[in-house]
Image (cartoon, rainbow, N blue to C red; front, side, top):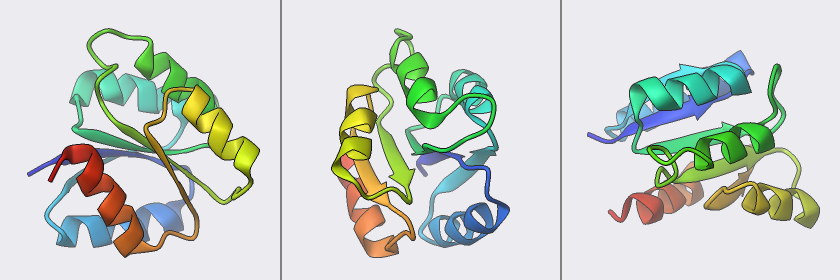
Length: 121
């Protein structure tokens, strides 16, 4: 079972996406801000990270860059999730070290395809 760290501050999004991913067989751990996301990446060593970009304490771009800057974490794939569908947000996410980008509201089949591609399933 693959472990996903979901970094998201919106409770409704956490509830809905976590349930759907658990039903697909993933183990989900949740961080509610970017700083906690970095700490949990270190302590949980997830197989993949879903990273909201608009987060309190530390935004998702900074959190992704911090995670990718650590030797033991840099190989963990990060998929940025954002309501911002503009190209500059996607480019900034990719420049911060994210491996992929998806928009909210989440299309679960599209996101699963991206998750499986990153996990090489």
